[in-house]
Length: 209
Image (cartoon, rainbow, N blue to C red; front, side):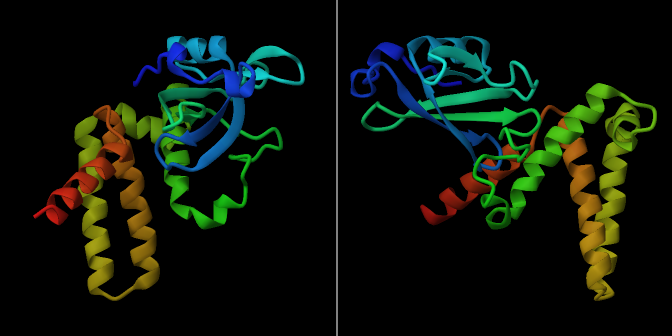
């Protein structure tokens, strides 16, 4: 996590406050915009949970302090003028007070792939709950070998559906493959972010040639 030195920021422009744009760490979907003062930034970077400053209440507030819908912060960066912050995090539950995943709900249609980030969070929740009725939890408990086997099985099903030109089956089997791949990555402490970073690095290396 990048540590932003609060003393290096331009607090004077906003009379001691700086806008903080919050983006999902995995999908890059914009979740919300709030304000931070120096104390809020220090707390956010110390315990790695988003804390902001409420202008209406003139007080600090930690996101989710009453609802439980926190945002685990993965990184904080500043813009070129050092008067705006970009906060990357992974939300637990809906971000907006309306119950929506983001305060900018119209993004949902524009970014359908953002659901994969939500699915990763749901997988984490199911594993943590460890319910006997949860397929996710039971499969995870059976270990990496079983999850790897499922990825192999689902990969074969995807290939067969493609060969048979069965579009509905191809979509369905691809969904199964993606789910089990996310579960396998989770078992090794990895996520889709690691995969997309690898793809991005390969693209950069290829275009540099």
